[in-house]
Length: 184
Image (cartoon, rainbow, N blue to C red; front, side):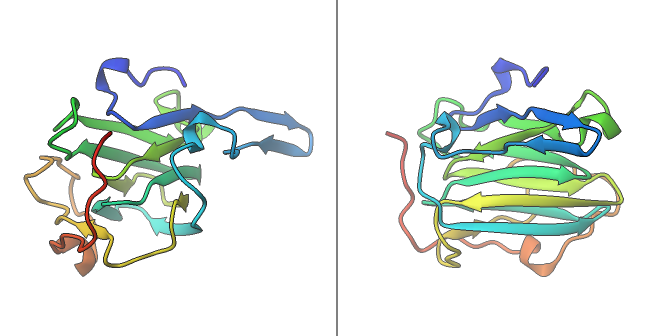
């Protein structure tokens, strides 16, 4: 991972730079293993795959208990993380970076796996024609645990660009009913 600046990191967000081992047949890339420091925050709950088209914006989502691990193997997305935990020393810090295929989109696009802790708002915008997001969650989907803030909210103050494609779910506000896991 070449340059996600240390000063922009958010407490609890972890990155794993990915290595590919290629030959004439293609490549092998290990994404995550249970022994990775990145994965120590929880247990496996669910593995999901999202296919999205250019200009799709999925934001703002957050969790009170669940951790997410994101990986973009195909395409390119702008990923935005915002620390919304008042007790965090990185409260209100925003991290913006591109995930996807470095060889196709350039050195400012990272091939990595990112861990997103509870309380950190997360969203993305698809920059390529289409993109695939693979993500693991530390628990199975619970609609009472996932919070929503409208994509265009001033909370994180992010400009998603012209003509974002959003669904009604990304225009609503919802506070999870489950108690939020606080920093220890």
